[in-house]
Length: 83
Ligand SMILES: [Zn+2]
Image 1: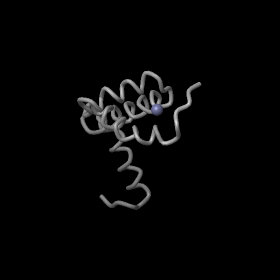
Image 2: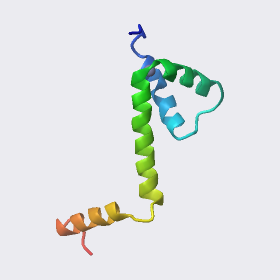
Image 3: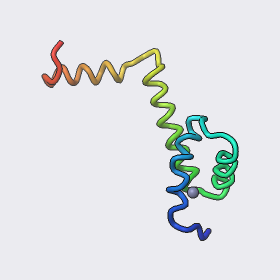
């Protein structure tokens, strides 16, 4: 359903990224939220962005940087990094 012209979602792509960071405000936020109400594809895009933001926050702020440690261990074991 829907006859959205191509390119509409691209137009919103950057706004979605800002929105997922909570950085979108004012009229642009209203416009985006209106569009989100009617656009399943942008809704799932937003969900993905929010997951990525959450992962990023975990990596940066998380108390257990296991992934980082593991990556480093892998690099060391492959000889790409020396201790
Ligand atoms: Zn859309």
